[in-house]
Image (cartoon, rainbow, N blue to C red; front, side, top):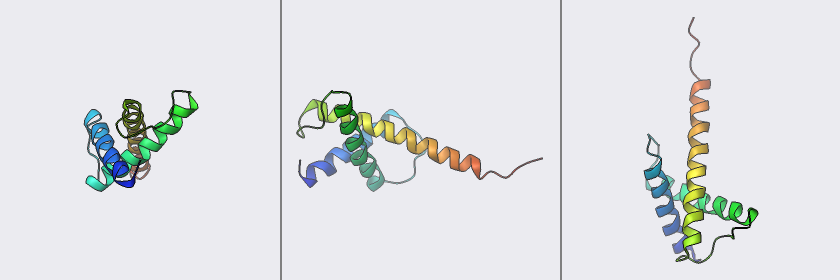
Length: 94
């Protein structure tokens, strides 16, 4: 896949992940695209690891399933890390 295909895949996979897991996420289009691109890479690596196959061409259904699944996983990890950071910074009340 070319760079334009990665950008489109990332933007759409990130948007789908944010639609499936709605919440108060910071960032706009760029953050959504980065989540989608990194999520696609993570999904492809996990797919290879479990012998499902990695990322294929742009129009391959497996590519989209792996990209969205990886984006969902990454979005969950980012939210959990953000929540842990906010909980850690709360002032102690007596």
